[in-house]
Picture 1 (tube, rainbow, N blue to C red):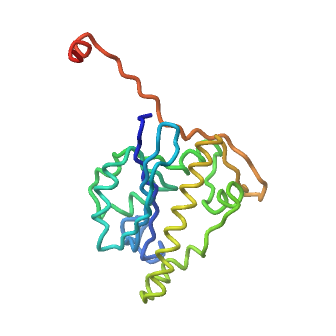
Picture 2 (cartoon, rainbow, N blue to C red):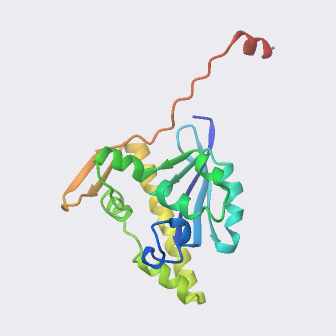
Picture 3 (tube, rainbow, N blue to C red):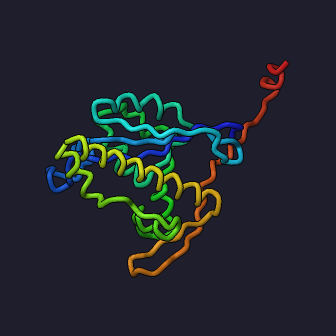
Length: 208
């Protein structure tokens, strides 16, 4: 891992439910708001600085530069949902950027998908601040109060995602209630891949 690393933790909300479109394509749901936490961490994964940013649909294109400069993009079910939902708004290269999906590893270890709320509840002692279905209701209402609630809901989900990631990175485990309401603990590895660089004679010569 580099001495300083830029991470982007993100989440988004959609304008429609799946039963409002003709197939199971997230790209047809429309994105209402995207929230992200951009931060710099040192080689020991200590946060040096960070900021929360939110973007409404008309400003989503502004997120591309932020994503493109990240050393790691972090989300929850983000590869199979969020990235697909963003297809109409951002370059297709988004799916080629370095991306860590927490749920992807949880499913690999656990054999089943687990909700963000379940992991947050047992791992962090925190819960989502609202019913996920209300996010679309807020967008449809579109008044100032509703949009404020929508933005806060999305940002708080980013906070949960960030804190779950940090816990897993530090403690190498996550805790949740499974399908049968049994508390389970699984081992996880959120570390960065080891990068090994072989120095050739030509490279060595170019250093002097």
